[in-house]
Length: 295
Length: 287
Image (cartoon, rainbow over all chains, first blue to last red; front, side, top):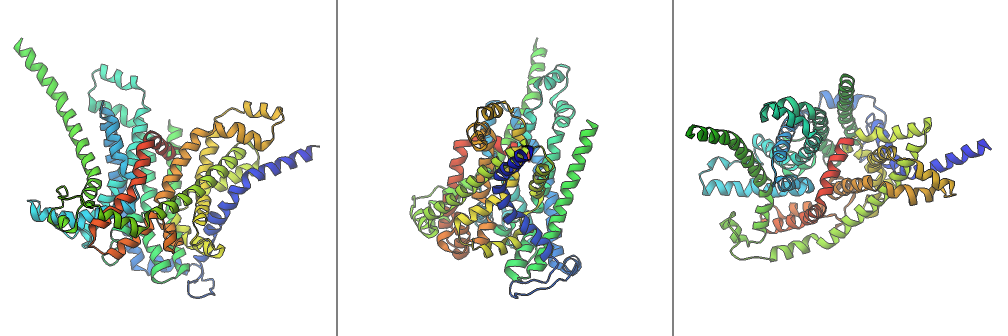
């Protein structure tokens, strides 16, 4: 009797879980396992046979591939700027918007809008601004400094990438911080004001400590996201000029599908990206757990 | 008396200047945000000569030809249909399969159940770029390349883990009484789920639909890898290919194309703004 019952329960469990598990296995688990395996082979897209080469792909990527190292450094630079600016601007906009009365939802609606649009479309629009509009403005007004090779010169194209990324990504952080601000009990800030604290003091001593958990989330979200940056660089500069603004994800894509078809080697780079993301996630979990213990 | 008055103006000033600065900053940020959309809208209605003449002014004559050309060259309606197909297949699968799995895993308290939950959640940190090479190989092997339902199916596999995680968390918070009384009344497992439980999940279902619809609609690299037939292009792929062909010259038409590409997302945004913003914040904080 009991055995029949458990057996029945197993069947029901399988019926509920297996559809999701099937697709998940097919398109997530097997490719993930595949990436780990191929990263240790010399498989390329042109040759049907391949063999096991151990860790030599990893060693090559980390020691003997200037383009990959360069893409890694570019990504790192991008990550630093994004984590800093997206979160600072996100907090600032959220605090400012919450201080408004009537125009609050109008500003929120406008500032979040670019997040609805694909970065690809956003980049093409900005491409018009950088390559056509700014030179035009420079020519016809006093803003001569705008006439630069925004896309062609690596120093400025990195700035262009940052501008477009901020344009497209700040709203997301802003929304997270607005949600955090709204969860602060009103009495807390009011009683502080009654005790004579000014707005700045309220922000430093009440608001900021209260939204600190959201800051942790925001920082790790941007860390995670910006290490995987692809669309904006692909559409804006294509990694160029040369490979000077290339980032890791783009380097993997080029390696596997455009330049050399060395799929095994590309997989090794993909695994390196995965290890970076995994490390970040573990640090995040550790930080959050420690904070919970403290609180 | 007079002294008091100046005092009050001083206080007012002290309060009003930061207020004004904050408002000023918000207005600048809003202008910066809207400017690219405004400038493309403006110039998409110009003739080529008009554009070169003045990029900041209103069009001297409204030119609809850009839109007509863009409409034809991208195969706009076909692209929209393709996008909808992919999103529809993906959403149906993600919502249906994840709600079932998330619910059952949450209600089953065994070692196996938590192992499978761990299996689903563990991949949430795997970047797409890390699996794309071997995913591409499997897609080719299964013959899912150049198939829109196929693309939607791949999204199911990539999307279920996050959705199961969200459903799992939500199911934990709803009471089991209703399910149990339905079961006592002789209601079968599937009927109990679809009649009683699934409707209770609708707040989180809504969030999941919004997050996933946006992701699939705006995703770029997977369709780029999988689709190669013009007839099957999603709107983003069509634009990217077209952009490459146009070179840097036909900006009036390109801008018209871009405006048309933004339109569905912007309409969606204005219709469901409140829910979208809420869903994004929730998804980010719980995920």
